[in-house]
Image (tube, rainbow, N blue to C red; front, side):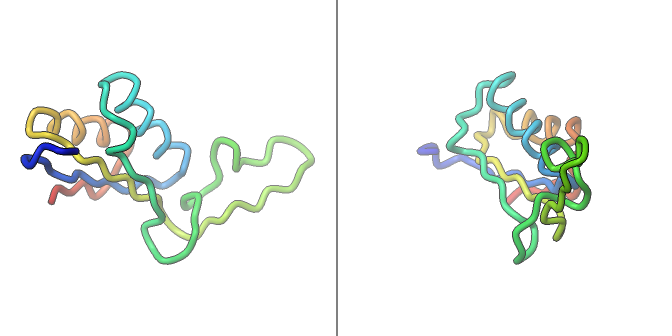
Length: 101
């Protein structure tokens, strides 16, 4: 974001699927720029969350071994006008430990 009055809002999600839903909700429903939203492992190890979900869930005979090394952290750079919206969306989509910096 080029605006100097931005805040980074972060939340922790237990599954990659929940993190993806939160991101897409911000982009598609609220018009945030996808380039201002970031997803990463909360810790040092690659992870798809703390439990299988979505494409990671075993849906038949195929074995599924997703990288369950911890939660997924999603951060969004928000203007003053959208910061409350981002917080509310993260909470609505199951985000935990919501912080702003």
